[in-house]
Image (cartoon, rainbow, N blue to C red; front, side, top):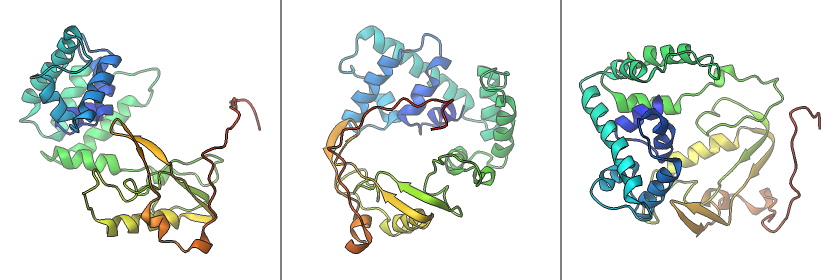
Length: 261
């Protein structure tokens, strides 16, 4: 439902579009949306921009029939946008719940009705500020439910890790352009704020801290070489024990839910 609301507000990720595909009549196939995403990323188009361009020009490697089905989904989204535009956030969510039966009990999602009710209650405080609601919802965490005694791997964003500590911490994606984040080579963001957030992540470790980075990575549909994050390079050499594992071949391991190993 949150993905659908993001799409209707014109601020979706491509993953949001994938998530809502089955909600619409005669929906485009998963392969069609994959082609659409590749085409949009190749042109550096945000999903909302790609929607607009897809209605006025042919999409590379997509047949007319597939593009018509994509256009049909886009038209249904546009119709919903028009109907929901005058409503505040909670009214929009209530209308979507009724339209798509989100409140119906699902055997695979037994807590769904209560989760929907919680979202609606939260939305009432935002009035017509849908963008702010989506942003705050994306940053919301469940750290209050974190069980320190549980023998599990905890996956968190740097924001969500504030106030928590772990014996061992892995910080992945420590590459220039990701940490600190940049959409393009020329973009300069608030590296001071990102450095402070990185410091939060570093200080979550009690005993051991691991940084990982890739020499190459697929970004926006392109394979490119990556450099180590400048935040890592700022550490004194004596504090780092660096290992190159790019050439190490590992034997696949079959994990079992019923094994104690």
